[in-house]
Image (tube, one colour):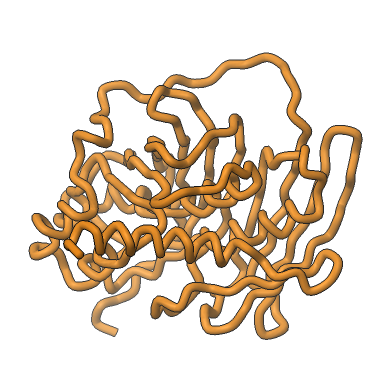
Length: 300
């Protein structure tokens, strides 16, 4: 088997694992359990908890109702060594909308909360902000394999470890500058993303995977104006909350542009916004997130 074939198999395995962790176990009515991938992380990836909580909520909603918004808070770090239990509260079922609240627990304590609203498909007024112009298409950018071969030897060990890990989502940053330099950059970031492997034609599952990937790279953006990255040893960074609006359905087997900006950082918090577009410019989702950015004294 060639190196390319091995890489393709690993990519497919990574997507299979993501689909597996999103396939929650039903414990009883409105109570579900999910596991975490055993990849040596010290805490659970935030996008995983968002995706699993959204799946739990969707399990209690009629199938013709689809998520249009979610609002979440990260309360405590998740422990990847043990399962996460998701409790769903059926707040309301109206004629067109359903509202759910989900509490994620480990060790008897809440680690995460999510509120989500679901709606039947309806027609109506339609407009959107256009996709940013002048950006390179994903085919013009280096991929993971190229990054590993051409650039990783220049990167710090923790950055190398990040890029060497096989992930279910492929990432192509428009710029790699912030990974390899201390240059202070504009408060924006553009990243092309897509699912690796086949994603079933299931809108609920596709929304959960979209929520999963929406937590990737977003917090990094608030560090760009400061010439820092999430890999800096003197920084403590973590997502504090996450909000997402699902405007239009889409498949995940083609590239999406994740355009991001950071209007403000203050009080050890960075605020970031994101928009996800199809390659032909259709706005499918908007994201907002505040993250903890705490600078520790290196001398301590």
